[in-house]
Amino acid sequence: MTAIKYFFSLLITVCATAEIQAQNIPWGENKLTWSDFKKHIENGNPHHAFTYSGINFEMKVINDTVIIILESYFDPSQSWVHTDHQVDNLLHHEQLHFDITELFCRKMRKEMAPFMNQHISVFVEKQMDKKSKEIFSRLFNEQSSIQQQYDVETRHGIEETEQEKWKSKISRLLNELDS
Image 1: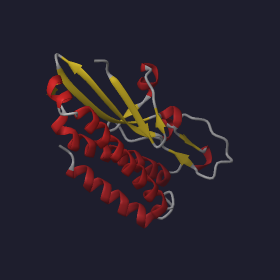
Image 2: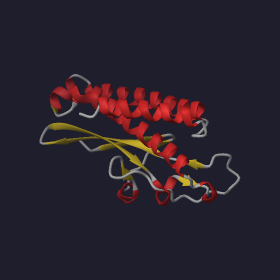
Image 3: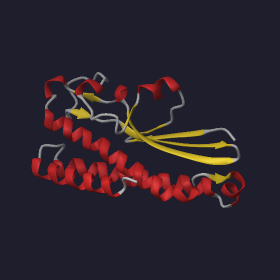
């Protein structure tokens, strides 16, 4: 069985090249900095910055055991900021978009835990492949809605009180799913 990779982001993208993957920044290494936002964009865009983050979903078989790997990432080549808006509060807002992606990666790991590290015959017999993809798709859609709600409620980071509420909420939820 060949490894299948699914990359879902704020936009759904299918990507299979190791070169592009190598550019991605996994969640948790460090906090984002403005130098991580590499895409050039014209100043006509009404938004000041954009974080392109996603979840790598990989299934592979090793020694007749199905392995599922879920990792959140930030794609510098698709993320941008207007140079005249590189301020701390906007960077914190963009970091929280990435943190929300990690939150949903953890939710996926939790829901997919029963399917992980199963013998291939059990995995196929119980149609775990289909179920794991359904979980991934459902949580991806939920994540997209939450990302939009976050932008609306914080007005893209302008509403500092709402921004702080979201920061506390996401931090608490990440801690709850830490294991």
